[in-house]
Amino acid sequence: MSKTSGSHAVKEFTKAPLTEEGLTETVQRITAGVDEFSVLNHPARAVLVAKVTEQWQQDFVSSFHIPDDLAKAGEAYAAIEQGDKYPSLSDASREAVLKRFDDRYGDGGPRLWPALNGK
Image (cartoon, rainbow, N blue to C red; front, side):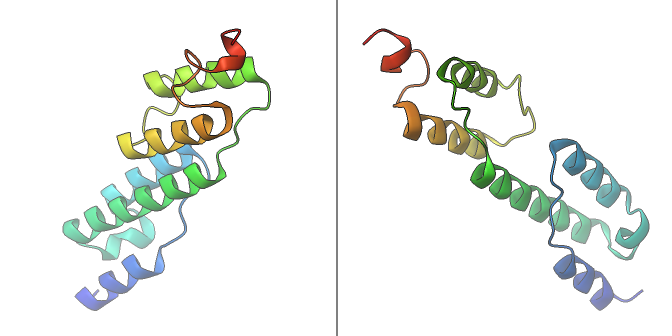
């Protein structure tokens, strides 16, 4: 296939997977040049991996559900902050998700949330 076909493939593949597992699988397929990604050379696959990962993280942050239960929100916040939950998130995406918690419950995370600390 021509170089143009590879560039076209990068531009056409814009839908990021819905889950973190799906992202991992898609990145592995792109990196290996499997199926529709076989037309891409290594630099084009690297660009596509970055693009898909960035899009997934943007979608993930914007649609992330903050638990209504304050105790569950505190547990989720701590797990995300420590990287135990969603370990593949970039630092910027992790901070964006944590900021959504702070916007809802107060700055500083569960250690400083007034309702969890009797304030």
